[in-house]
Length: 83
Picture 1 (cartoon, one colour):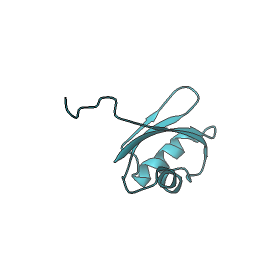
Picture 2: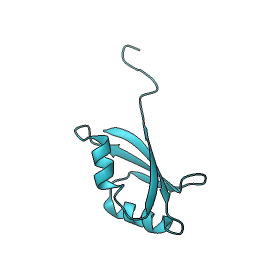
Picture 3: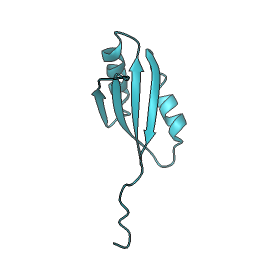
């Protein structure tokens, strides 16, 4: 599984509606309301055999009232092989 974080900006007044719709799709492992430029942050595990862009577009970003998103890919911070 590949871990990605997706920040989501919603249309004004629609954050709770978008959060509910995301939750109902059961695609995120964690979902938070945030302050700043984006309204929500989702932690998502993408299956290894799936294309990240297609997976997010088809499973998350087609939800109504999402204005913008920012996806951050993650990588291992510590290499433990041979340690």
